[in-house]
Every structure is written in C-alpha cells, then in structure tokens.
Length: 256
Image: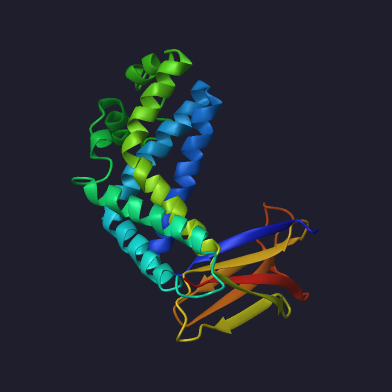
C-alpha cells in the first residue's frame, strides 16, 4: 500500500481556527511528555499561543455552535437503517456531554491561566527576539531549575482550563474528517480547479499524494470554487515552480 501525505485546506474561518488550536494542543501534549527544559519551554509557548488565539474571538461560542450543528446533523441520521446505531448514539452522547461542559464554563476560556504572572511576563516580552535569556527573565530561569515533575505539574495546571476545548476540537475535527466524499482526480500540467455545488456545505479539503512525490499542493479555496496548483521545490533555497506533468491525487471533500 502506497504511503500518502495528506494536505488540508479549511474552507471557512471557524475550521481554520480549529486547525490552529489542534496544532497547539498536540504541540503542548508532545513537549509536555518529553520532559526536558527545552521541551517545557515549547509547552509554555504553546499555552501562551492558546491564550492569544482564544482571546481574539469567542472560541467557546464558536465551538458550541459547531458541536450543536454537527449534533443536529447526526441526529437526523438515526432513522436510517444502515447506520450503526450503537456507534452513533455513543458519538451523540459525547457531543452532548461536551456541549454541557462548555456551557458550564463561566466567562472566557482560560481566564485563570491568563493571570499567571510568569506566563504574563513572558507574553509581554515575546516580541523581543531571544527574549527567554536568563538575564531577561530570572524568574523563568528559576522555574526551569525545578525538578521535571514540578514543572510538569505547573504546565498541567495552566493547561487545565483548555481541556474541554481540546476534547471538543478533537471530536469536531474527527467527525469532519470522517464525513468525506472522496474521488480520484488528475491535475493537468499540475493544475486542478473545481466548482463547489451550491447544495453542499464543504468545510475542509484534503489532498493526498504519494509520500515520495516531488510535488506538493498549494490550495486556494472560496465558497464557490477551489483550485490546486502542484508545486516542486527540490532546493528550499530557491523559489518553487509549478509541476508541468499530470499529477494524480486523491481528493476528499469533508461535508458534514
């Protein structure tokens, strides 16, 4: 079986934000587990970036809306005979549980973590290149000198207000990625374009090509159509060029 690389392109701003959050959640999770001071520095940066993303807009409301929308769509499938009712009921219950937990959160997500003095000081200095030097932040140097388990405990405490959001975003994107209309397509001379039918609500595109391919897709998408330009860049020091050969690829349109 050929190994594939999959590239994703969100169609709307809500899914774009969810993908950014997903990346930060997984980045935090990975570096928390690794345990070195360098890893924990990246885990702190991930938390501070989460704060930046979640304070720009009402992420709790956007997440609730998407959970409720998906839940309503899936509820309508329950009457179909070919549906695995046990699996569907389990998914619907998970969605409803997360909706209830999000609704129970008072005020802005992560507000407890926003006021942590060490994180606040680091955010204030984040615009300075190399701002985490010891002479800039002796409090941070002191925190780094603590045993790994103490640092990990602090990180988990600071991340805790984002746990429900993490679970919600994971479930939303998992449902979306499994609600696909897939097809095998060919980009003629490295270019492909397709209109989006007016009766479809496509939220995410997935382009899959063999992992050993020299090309990668640059995707431009709007509400009415999308285009894919396959590019080649064997030397990252040079400007990429459009592939001139025909490129076969798998197209997934995530439509729930």
